[in-house]
Length: 449
Ligand SMILES: Cc1ncc(COP(=O)(O)O)c(C=O)c1O
Image (cartoon, helix red, strand yellow):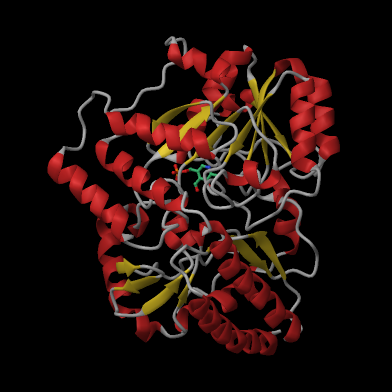
């Protein structure tokens, strides 16, 4: 629940004015739900001016240490010089779209396959939504089975087939053990629920039961390896391994949606971090260095259906010259030895630092995440799935935390079910400054309770 106004509205007057003007011609004033007032940006989102490294500047001239990172893609920080240069070179020397293959696509694909355990062959596209849509289509085609298991609280893009049960009202979502499929809203065809089984995440028994009951009808289990779309929820020890074992036993494909975790938890994604290899996987935000490039790939025998045209994967802009140039430059940087060790050092300093601040201030929180992605849950109870979050996480305290940090020059998403992202551009100094400001805000939260 938001307060409906900014306490220090004077800091954001130009943003307020621009939002009013935008609302006249753009529904809701924004071009994505995640930027809308109803997603937390109440009474209006900030309007961005520009970014540089770990910092974002709004149109009112406020500077922020940026942990929003464009909701993930700015993993190298804003305007990383090598990526910018690669894109400028590509545009000036080559062009943008040819409807013909180019050699850098193959070069990029070799880098992706070398980095990620599950990738034997890869198709490139533009967004995570497309990548998941293609993976699900392919899984149905390969197995000849109609249903997909997906988990309550996850988000796999906005295509009709999977835009279900992200954050449904619990009153309309069935029982904890057997959730009902709830569409994101009107317009998503009700008949598509036939193709879905919705389960609670982190529950081996529920998965086992579903596979034993419906196994012959299930094409794939689609999951984020870390639930990053209901705040940040880690897999219980052994859960991903159990998923792998159970899906194999029932001839069901395991799809990891690594749109957030890919190239962020490790160069090889969450699958490398946890040592569990899916059959198919999708990637987007981490790989393009801020440009729209996504990846769908996996086992060669499954991808063979794409190779021979049985399953069609199209796209005018797929593997366009700009995105491929950006991703090639990004992959070269990410593959530099020692990068991820440094990233974890800086991120852990922030996550553990925040944990200590809230503990010292006696504010019941769970600071949950892995490496450069995490969330602060204002909850006395641990959060293991969407229903825990829906029942226990305080949105009111989160708003005080968020706005207190915003006013002090630290940016992240206002939604309690979103994440904080740390980039390779953040330094220990940025973290220490963030922690100092957080100490101040923790006092404010403690007083409000
Ligand atoms: C796990 C996951 N899958 C898919 C998507 C959709 O990606 P895109 O916004 O690039 O379409 C998102 C976006 O946040 C995501 O978090």
